[in-house]
Image (cartoon, rainbow, N blue to C red; front, side, top):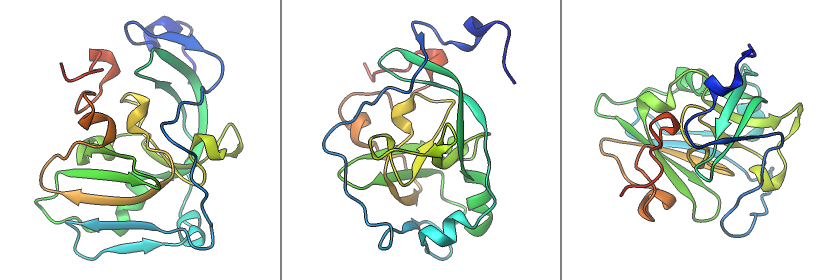
Length: 191
């Protein structure tokens, strides 16, 4: 639902943009969809592997959400489609000690989340943006979308979710970004 007062939807020190900027560290990976898998492992009762067809056969969600980047832009009312993290987790049995998840991408990128953040409302394993397949520059074929945290937590080119009993910093967190990244608290950097 759109707000009549967008400023209340924009965290401190953010500016609204009308397009999804392309920010990527390193080259865009070339991914063969026939070989692609989403692996789910770590502290789970049984590791799972989803082919593209298996994953996209799950019920879809299509939230319209606001997203916020640590670099200072916010995109309001962005339309995504994919599999809700809660829907995926109906098929995964976590062990009781699983409190965190490391989202790993093709290439060397990863990011960390608490299980609570991963299971929050509107968290999505997205394959469409704006009614079209996500472009390779924006994470095709699958991108994690975590709208309540800064957008670096929305890992592009998702390939693995590893559940853990401890929080392990991902790529940007190891380079000094905040371990959680709440835009409303301006959790941009660890210092």
